[in-house]
Length: 460
Ligand code: UD1
Ligand code: CA
Image 1 (cartoon, rainbow, N blue to C red):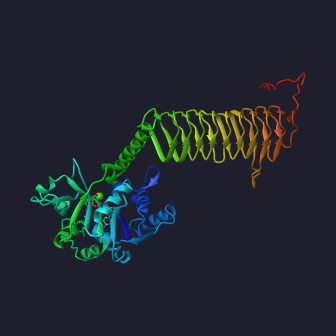
Image 2: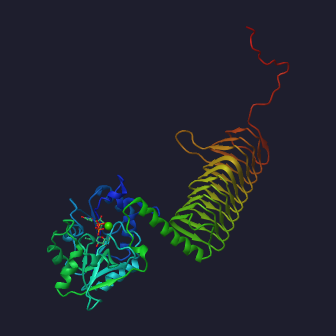
Image 3: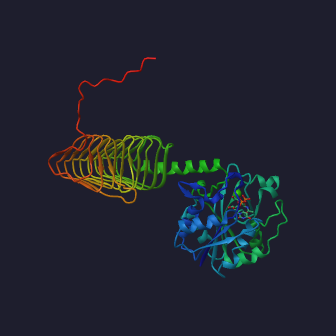
């Protein structure tokens, strides 16, 4: 049986933020959510998070973010060290099996590494995740037996270490897997007679050695897996490294990024062949780009599907939209949830589309609004035209038949239906259905007033 304990009670003083540290986001997702999702993939019996600062908001947001997971939250007040933190979880741990200890502020540990640690423990050894660092300062050092270096003797915290120990470059990453029954015994023995007057979880290593339990060390596949976040600078650095990793993976799959350093995925990005993405784009939620899609500079796409050959010109904002093959979007276009565009649709600058379907070949090229509309094939929707879809209480639909031409600056007051092939004269306010194939004009007739004089200033 596997239990997982995640330490997340610390204040994160160096974040200098009112928000609890573990709720700050990496790639659009709270740090702790990354850890809980990875932990969740190990199918633990229980995932116990130790919380303190901002406990209520941490618990609330994680229950919502990872629904259905076997989550438990335990308060640690006050925070007397990492050993004290795990002590708070003891009543919830089973009597046997393995306990995996993770950190809520180390978001990018892979499931494979966590699993390897649990396997190294095998319910009977103390398994530590360690790594060699060029600059180990601040970390707990792994002290090995000089005569038999495969034997780990203990972890000594930086503040308690001698100069010789500080020279050790192998450090404890903050993650370990422990036989649960032994963990319970060892935690009961912790004392705080050290430089920080804290109960150190790391002291259990020496207890294991004294009890004849073997201590083994496993290493992660990469440093990024064990990097923690303590400050806005570290958060931004980890974000960049993570984004670079994703950019590299996409480029290896053939995606052409103008600049991998100016590229952000906050969710999932699926690309076909010959996709090109210019600088400064942000992809959120799940975005799917078909073969040959081109995304111009500085676009934000959230939960969108863009079909093959479509081009999104610079500075567009697309959310919850489906764009058909060969469509042209932007520059400066906004597609909102429920925008469903057929093949070869053109949406130009300053055009907003919401909850509307546009059939193949329809065009709205300038300064327009289509909300709650069904637009037929090859419709031409003129500059400045809008659907008046909201009467102050309810939304209504506008239906525009195939091949309709809507002139410039029209107001279509929904519910209203324009018959196929019809033409709506520019400047019309359409409040009644229009017949197919004919010209409808709904505006005041133009008159010329003969002999009209401009007003003149009165003499003083
Ligand atoms: C700890 C390790 C150190 C290791 C380092 C890796 C100990 C004694 N030391 O040091 O060997 O190299 O992590 O980053 O364990 N926390 C609580 N309650 C507490 C104290 C901490 O929940 O009372 C949480 C923190 O929120 C954080 C984690 O435990 O998520 C680690 O705490 P931190 O203070 O950063 O440990 P370090 O002193 O850096
Ligand atoms: Ca730390």
